[in-house]
Amino acid sequence: MQDCDLNSVKILLIDDEAHCTKLMEAFLRQAGFSQITTTNDSRQALNLYHQVKPNLVALDLRMPHLDGFEVMGQLRQVIPAEDYVPILIVTGELDAPTKHKALAEGADDFIYKPVDATEMVLRMKNQLQTQRLHNQLQMHNGHLEAQVLLRTKVVEQTQLDLLNRLVMASEYRYDAKGAHAWRVGRVAKLLAEIKGLPPDQVDMIKKTAPLHDIGKIGLREAIILKEGPYESADFDAMKAHTKLGSKILADSRSPLLMMAREIALTHHERWDGKGYHKMKDVQTPLTGRIVALADSFDVMTHPCSYKTALTIGQARMEIERHAGTQFDPELSALFLKLIDRDGETLLDDVKDTPFFG
Ligand SMILES: [Fe+2]
Image (cartoon, rainbow, N blue to C red; front, top):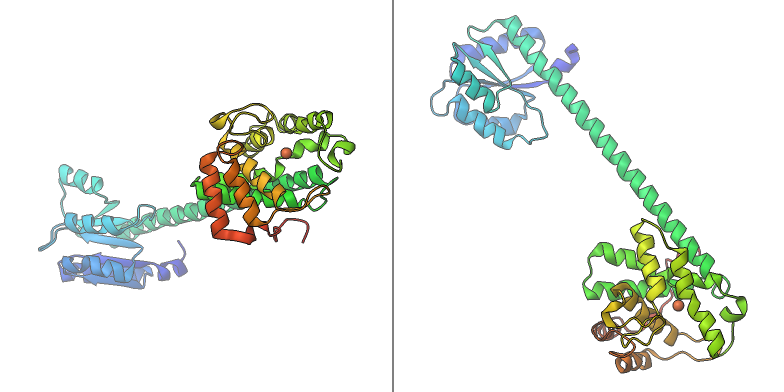
């Protein structure tokens, strides 16, 4: 250990005999240590520890009021488990059981009386070297944790980025801004929140709901861009987008893509079992039931070539009317609360839509 390091080391000496602390302090100063605090009253040890925050404690075992074991117990309680603060027991003759007890209760080494200056300083330096390595390891671990965190964030951001571009690609032919998809994502998120889903699930729904129509990427332009309501053959073609979407998103182990797939397949199911794949009530996964409502609400409240938009009040009545037939009744009730709480803002375009400014 370099001398300049010794100047920064703080040592706390606790011994009821003043001549002992004086002698040890003198030895330490001679060796180059300069920040030394001493006490001859063991009752002061804990207070001094808090004041000084020493790097190392030297502690006598036999003292009046509080003996060394009691002081060590106090100190070990306040020293955080991840910190390495060596406690050296200063003692005369020590029988084996007492030595074992001291080691078991947190002593790191011993300094024997009469104190030999060289031996004491070397033992302290050894402990301080161990402490330095411990601190380096802690710093290194902290650095690694920060790196892992940063890289995880980059991976998550990349994943989100790719999902968003996938949404954009899937909607591009009929809604270049993907406005419908983002709005469905936001409303589905609000509905998942009011339903009381855990925050990570809410976040996943927000990210995956915009992909509900990804299967439309496989439909003919004539079907997608068709003006007016669908006739039977066209409607069958249109219905295929749920299976196509599910196929595109299949066989992934990513929880996000698994949820996206579930939503793509089931967002046109109905509570009464008369939807695309005839799934009834809770046979349809909750994510699908949530997006079914969010999607229908957005379609109702926005105009297209063959219909005008409903007002928020009219959409509210529609949801109320179809609760228990088209829509999950419990989710419908929650959606009505959402409309009453957030009103027209549910119709706003998503301001922070990626890529579109
Ligand atoms: Fe759809």
